[in-house]
Structure formats: structure tokens, C-alpha cells
Length: 260
Ligand code: BTN
Image (cartoon, rainbow, N blue to C red; front, side, top):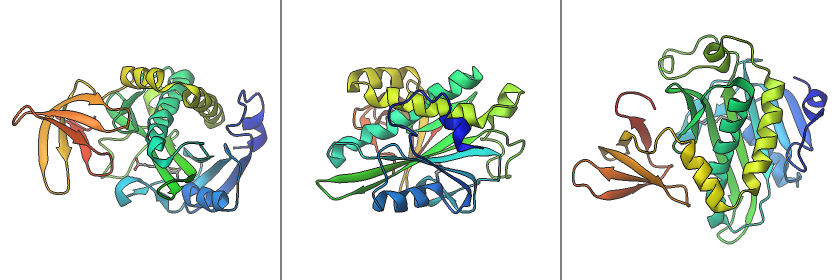
């Protein structure tokens, strides 16, 4: 990967106008948060060819072998109160799904809250981390990991994960994918809330599906009915038909038949 090649013909105003490309780092999210704390500009992109301690959601890791995937973190300084930052996670998912569709032609869909799946297999995960007080949002780091060239996966994710090369049968360009993501991110960030939610819902792999909600204390099944503007999922439970609100941090939501 080469920062000049990404910047070449990049059609954005602010996303990726500064690029920090690292051969290896522990985690681009950690690196980006440190840069944000030092005042890095809105839209600064941190990229790594390899991560030695990639971070995933809910305390898990993200396997990030050299040259195999896209491992990036985008530094954002949105001018909104912390409570309104929830839509950023939905907007990031939308941007990645669009970028994958654009560069591969695959039917990339969003598994709530923001995994990207193709044919029921996960090809991308996201981890957004916020630096905020109760009133002031200083920065958000949107971390995105996309499986691009991987040909095999560790046993525990082998049945649920895939890569863009495996799914298309050709070699997908990481450079083109990153450029598409930055352009789609600007587009998603500029959408009014209603358009964004409509587009998100149209791209969802979860809505209308029967799901299993796996929480810390309980597990239940139901039908995923709606994603709220705040990014929570409303599930109609099988047990009593009540509508329950599911927060992304609390649970894992699985399809009844498999991962998605
Ligand atoms: C998930 O658990 O699905 C989220 C995975 C997020 C991984 C990406 S890779 C780039 C960025 N840096 C990190 O340490 N994590 C995110």
C-alpha cells in the first residue's frame, strides 16, 4: 500500500486528506486516538499493513495479518453533542457496505449493528471509540477492518468469516477499496438523518429476520423489526410479543439459522 496512490484521484473534501500509513502497529484505533489527543485534523486516516493487537468489539481481538486486509481508523471531530454521535456508527457501516458493493459488485449487507456480511458471512467489523465528556464530543475514531485477501481463517471463525477475494474469485485492490470508503463516508456523513436511516434499512441483513439475542444474563428469540435513529434494535419477542430494545454494547444478535 502506498499513501500517494490512495490520495491520487481521491474525490473527497476532508476524509483522508491527511494519511498516516504504518507498516505495522498494535492497533490503528489506539494509534489514531493518540493522534487525536495531540490535535490531529478531522478526517485524518490512519492505515496499517499489519496490526499486532487489533481490537474488536466486546473486548475481543481482530486478527490482522500483514498485507491481507484493510485495517484503518478515521479520526472524526463532528460538531454535535455526544448523544448524537450514535448515527456515526450507522453511517460508517453504510459507507463500508457501499464501498464494498462498488469495488466488488457483491451484495454487501449490514448485520446490526455494523458488521458487513456477504452471503451470511462476515467480511468486515467496525469499532468506534469516542473521546467525550457528558457535554462535549472531542473526537471519534471509526475503526474498520475488512477481510480482503485472506484465504483461510482461524478455526473459531472459519464457519462465519470470509474475504472479498474468496467471495469474488479475484484479487480486490485494497487501495481502490480505501478510496471508495473515504468517498462513501463523506457522502454518508452528509446525509440528513431520514435519508441515512432509509438507506441503512434498505441495506440491512437483520431487519425482518428472526434473531437470537444473546445477552450476558439471558438469551431470547424474536423478529428484528426496526433500527431506531439512536442506533438501537427493536426486537419483537417470540415469548410474549413485546417490543424490546437491544443496545449494541450488550449483546450478540445472531440469525436463527446461522451467523447472520
Ligand atoms: C469487530 O469486533 O467486529 C470489530 C473489529 C474492528 C477491527 C478494526 S481493524 C482497524 C481498527 N483498529 C483496531 O484495533 N480495530 C479496528
